[in-house]
Length: 302
Ligand code: NAD
Image (cartoon, rainbow, N blue to C red; front, side, top):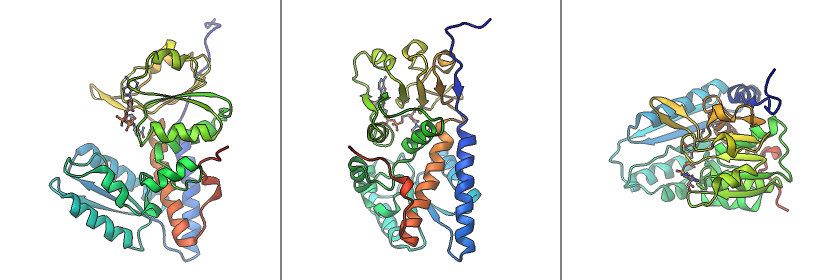
């Protein structure tokens, strides 16, 4: 006999969902090519030779190849000046054959990430970090939205988690994850609590969450007894601990308490890359075909 209070936790297979979405994109690109259009093209810029960043950009290029999209890379030395990088971005902005541009973070200290975000043409902004895309997100009419938050929303939707009226707690307020995912959840009518490094009584906030998004980069900080029974737990955090990737949630302790949880491997990670492909395809559609997919609207403010 199992513990009667124990909940059957669904562990999200982010890779399977990512593959399903990538197959659909692959079919769309094949039919565009068959109709005589060129495939979408993502270009990735890396400054410096951080091995983790190098492996991330290889993964992104492989993902492009698998769906039939083109990709290219610019590998610049660590000593590249901000001016040199901005000049390259200007050339890429004006290159009609390129639909999506991504500058891999982190950047060396002589280059301002804000200057880089502002230098990318908002219509080609695959990571959606340009202030115009951020502003549109706030207004509820964004076409390009940062990839990890879109991945979180896609997982919640795939598993039919009720968002309207739910209490969503987001740990982390970064521009790339915490802020945009909070806005998307609020636009889908969740009541959102944004928590961060100065939040008091974090555990208490978490305990009232129907949807808990952990994006702090603090391994296993969310304990089993912080989770409301049946809650949907989206563990975005990834930290390498003794050679293993560990999430922000104590996964073992969450099993039997959470209703749904994303594991640190094959969870949100593959969905993030999938949403990068989707943003590239979206940018291509808007630029080349003059029609964005209306289902990509981030949310309707009320
Ligand atoms: P970040 O460092 O920019 O932001 C972290 C946020 O967490 C900050 O707002 C901070 O206030 C908050 N925070 C940190 N420690 C906290 C604590 N003890 N209590 C409460 N809040 C705390 O990080 P980021 O870029 O937003 O990424 C967050 C995590 O998500 C990292 O582990 C990163 O590797 C991971 N990540 C994963 C993916 C993916 O595809 N799976 C994508 C992006 C980021």
